Image (cartoon, helix red, strand yellow):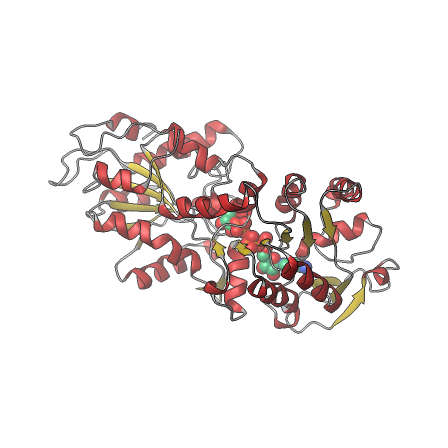
Length: 438
Ligand SMILES: Nc1ncnc2c1ncn2[C@@H]1O[C@H](COP(=O)(O)OP(=O)(O)O)[C@@H](O)[C@H]1O
Ligand SMILES: O=C(OP(=O)(O)O)[C@H](O)COP(=O)(O)O
C-alpha cells in the first residue's frame, strides 16, 4: 500500500479543518537568528498550499536535541519569525507543545491561519522509547485538531496529519510516527520528492558509487556504514567520525570527537573492507587544533604522527588535511554516483572549512549524479558560496537519506500506510479519533 499524498488531502477537502503538519525546521542558528533557512523554504509549499485552501495549519517541528526540557536556546521562535517573513503572512508560535497555549492558539486559529507549536522535543515523550508515553503525547497532538465545531465552510470536521519532515522520517517519534495512527495521514510534497530522487540511488546506481561521510552525529552515522558497505564501492570518511577509525587503528586522537564503545564496530568494518568489496578510505593527514575555536592554533599532522600522542591530550582534529583533500577529490571526480553527508570539518570556522570546500567543489566538477544530504551539509555548501543548482540534488535530510540508501524502512514513511480513514469534511466524521486522549 502506498501513502496518500497532499493532493489526496486537498481533494478530500481541508477548508475549516485543522491539519497538523510535521515539518523539519531544524535550522542552524547564529546569535539567535536563522543562519540557513533552506529547510524553512523547503517546508513552506505544503504549509501555504494548505493555508490557501482554508485549512487551519498547525505545524510541529523540532530544533536541535534539547533532551526533553524547555530550554529557550532551542526555541523555534527564530524559525517562526523567518517563516513569517518568507511566507509574507502571520505565523503564530505557541508557548508549548500540547499545553494550554497550544490548545488555545489552535482553537482560535482562523481558516487559513498558521500556528507553529514550540519545539516538540521540549516534551520528553516525543523521543521516548516507551510506546505508551509517545502514544499519550500523540493523542494530545491529535486532540489539537478536534474537540470543537468548525466554521461555516465545514460545520464539523476531523483533523488530518501531513508528514513533510523528510529530515526526521527515520525517527520513531510521537510527531513523526505515532500520530499517523490517530488521524487520516498524508505524505507531504517534500517527502515525496526526496524519496523520488533518492530512489535513483538505490536500484542500480552508475558506478563507481562513492559515499562521503562526515559530520558530528557520529554514532548515527557509524551505524549506517554496515549496510552501505554492501552497496557503495568506496566510502570516504571525514568529519567527527574519522577519529573512531583512527583510534581503532591505534592512533591517539586527543580531545577529538570519539565514540570509544564503537571501536569494535569500526574494527569490524575495516576488516570487512580488507576482505574486499567496499573500500574504506581514511584521511592520511589531519588538521589538529589547540582548542575548539575559530582562532585556535593549528597544524597539519600526518596520521602516523598521531600514534605517539605528542600533540597532547587537549589537541583535537577539526578538519582533514591537504593530502587527504587531494585524495578525496580524485575519488569524487572519478565517481559516476556520489552521495555526500556530513561536513569534513568544522566548516563554521574558516580555518577548518578547507576539507568541506574541497569536497563540495569536487562534487560540482563531477559529471555523474551528485547528491548532498543533511541540514548542516546543505547549509555548509551555501555558506561556502556554492549554489544549489551546482549539485544534482540537495536533500534536506542527512540521516534520513542515509537510512533510505541503506535500504532500511523509515518509520515516518511506513506509519502513513496505517493511517485512519479520511471522511473529508463530512459532518461529524470521526471526531472520536481526534478526541482520543484529549
Ligand atoms: N572533526 C570534527 N569535530 C567536531 N565537529 C565536526 C567535525 N567535523 C564536522 N563537524 C561538525 O559536524 C556538524 C554537522 O554534522 P551533522 O549534523 O552530522 O551533519 P548533517 O546535518 O549534514 O547530517 C557541523 O556543525 C560541523 O562543525
Ligand atoms: O538535522 C536532522 O538530521 P541530519 O543532521 O541527519 O540532516 C534532522 O532534523 C533530524 O534531527 P535529529 O538527528 O536530531 O533527529
